[in-house]
Image 1 (tube, rainbow, N blue to C red):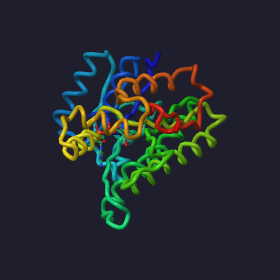
Image 2: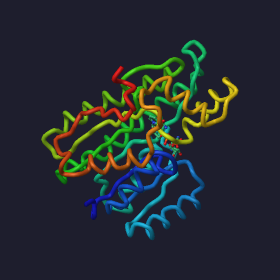
Image 3: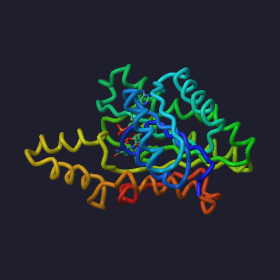
Image 4: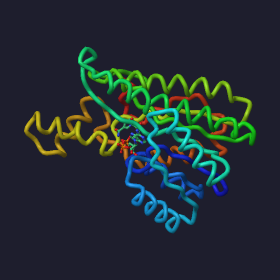
Length: 260
Ligand code: NAD
């Protein structure tokens, strides 16, 4: 379905981004893998994708916390593939503290990686999509793009910001064959949230699995975490012709978290 297309997935060295890259490669897209990973290991991962899926891959370890880092990532992608048709802005970090204690450097890093990076990659890649009359931009926001939680000032601000950015990009490209959507997951089974599951387990003196269950049900009516592969399947659907008129949407995949 996506043969001949190229997808850049930021933060695809692990977690949700990795699963998205797998599903897109399985659908035939060439892939730019990206993340903070040893370059030799990243290159090996790219080779593995090439043999598993019969697509071409590039790995980049550009630090996307700066405009220059995003430019390096985009330039490397264009140098290798000539174009990027599918852009998934997925890389993200988390830090928790009350607003009065929030370290300024952590605020700046979360806004840069979780929000500004998507601005940079989009501004650099959307002109090519417009010129070709086809493009898909998928921003991995969060339920925290729609509602708030305690201790997550920077994360919630960045995720609300990316939902807003998505809407503007959707409107500006509505007649150009380019869609922009945000996916808003609740709890997803990845390393990013494992520490939060462990913290509940430690607090309550229970196993990791029980800590995980308690963390999830504190927010989600559905008592289980979403699997990263399910988000990969959604991304592939958003790249299909059937999704051509889905744009500017913020799609919760959150076990009913935001239905309450
Ligand atoms: P993860 O920690 O497994 O992956 C994060 C990725 O971002 C990694 O590839 C990492 O190398 C990359 N990254 C981080 N900082 C970077 C930097 N400065 N430069 C380049 N790359 C950088 O996390 P995940 O759970 O897969 O999260 C992916 C996205 O999904 C994030 O935006 C996160 O906010 C969002 N999300 C996650 C959950 C969840 O429950 N896991 C829920 C909602 C939203």
